[in-house]
Every structure is written in structure tokens, then in C-alpha cells.
Image (cartoon, rainbow, N blue to C red):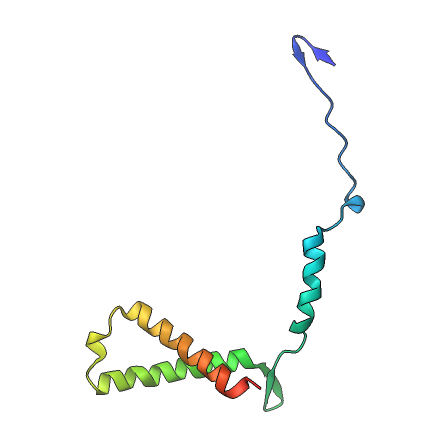
Length: 104
């Protein structure tokens, strides 16, 4: 179709949404997700909590205890930068708790 001196081409038809298929990589990924079916959980007073949540809480508590130990031994002022140290300590204690308590 020509309008003035500009030529317009009709756009190619788009496939209907029902004709689309997921890529093979996405379909193949579901084969490896079958191992994620069992989530370790802990029964506390009738409520089930995921083990990772308990590990994080224990990691934070152990980091607070570590900070108090650093203050008592007077090495806390030398541990810098605190913005990196304490999140790393939380990660260390969390993963250690996960490996010691829940790895079976």
C-alpha cells in the first residue's frame, strides 16, 4: 500500500499464544528440579519451620555473641570495616549451623 510517497508493508502475522512452546532448555531444567522436593523442617510447638530459617536465627545469635566476645577481649576496634565483617560472620555461623545440625 502506498500513501503519498511512503510505502507501508503489512506486518507479518504473529503466532497465537497457544502455538508458543517453551524453549527446550527450560523444559529440560525441570528434570533437575526434582531433587528440590524435600525441604528439611523442624517442628517447634506444632508449627513447622524451615531449617534454613532456624540456621539464620542461630547465625545471628552467634554473631551477637561473637561481637560481645570481641568487645570483652578489646579487639573490636581493630576489626574494620564492620559493615563487611558482621554480615560475613552471620554467613559463616549460618552455614556452619546448617552443616553441623542439618546435614545428614
